[in-house]
Image (cartoon, rainbow, N blue to C red; front, side):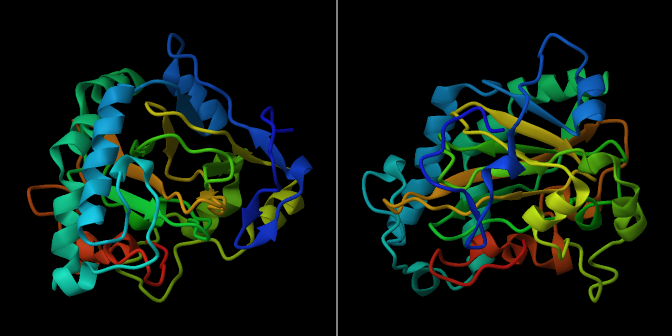
Length: 303
């Protein structure tokens, strides 16, 4: 069972999830063997990894850019959506706009900074390196990330690649926190279905799981693990850990701001789509491949 009290049922794509299907993520032991914990659980919940003040600065930097396109109301840090947008009207190239937001100095000081780089070096037991591309997301009420694993989207480099999901501010249970499907990193059927699949080379094959997360967990006799997050927290997981997010059910219009980056051993080959000064990303579209590049009032896609 979830250790935290929930004021109302959590939802996935509008469907309520039974409370007995939800459990709590385990805090990682920062003084223990991180690699062993990652292999055991499929994730590492690193509480307070980032400087909370640096996270708040990054949050304001991001949301102030959305104030400028009339998607967020002042004060920016509150993160309240207006329900309207002038992003497309003011920026003809949405990918270029989102790249400029994603490359903000305050954000990069958090997601590519010395604290997280040292933690990932400790995990790998050698110096760590990160993608230059970053997956910044701002999720409005009613939105969530669908169920998937990361391998099909970024598998041309290191086999030790990990995702680092960092909320840019607090995320309560009703604001769409990320969840991990417990034990999914050990399921051989996920490797049978997805190992070696490259969504850019085989665009007609889906890279995400079609099953409902709740139905999948029930069929497998497992749970969806989540928690509320505070500024500074970071959730790390491998390429075959199934994950998604609960719906953002904020009644105040508060958006959920988070950013993914990827780390690997510096000695390994890096996926060329997401590295270098001008990463082409999926389909050569750069930051334009992300649904986050679209106005907050636009349609959502997997990426």
